[in-house]
Length: 168
Image (cartoon, rainbow, N blue to C red; front, side):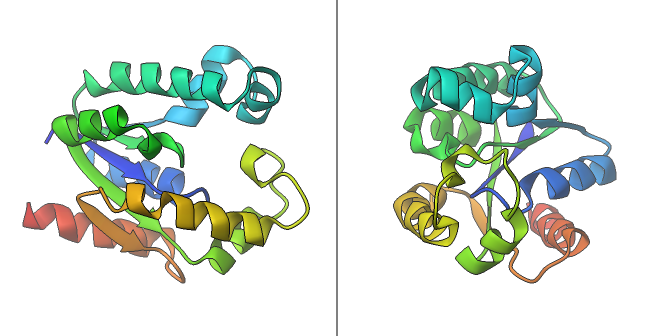
């Protein structure tokens, strides 16, 4: 296993758990959205607003391809990365794909007031979350393992991932 890829909807703990997991394993950590934002010198929400989602997805795919050539990385992936079948195949070929999930209500609580979430802009974020979760569920189910993070602390999430890894 070269890398560990954490996928799942926004607000499920990918970045927080990923950073802690990498530290525990003495691996590197990278958040694809943060790396894109750093390289583009602007926030993801601004990339979406100015260039659109398709442009962002191209950046995301290119960044994933670069990271996949490395070893011993825990990678926090953007929530929509799994929509592209090529991305999923690449992650499965170069590492272990773990999906972090949570209930729509829990996600809404976790991300409420966060203006950096372009897909939740609008009137009813809970309904939007429910819709996107339904639409993305078949893609998330392609992961090697799924962990429900509802009601769990980041340490508990990392403990569950670590147990999975020990079984490998």
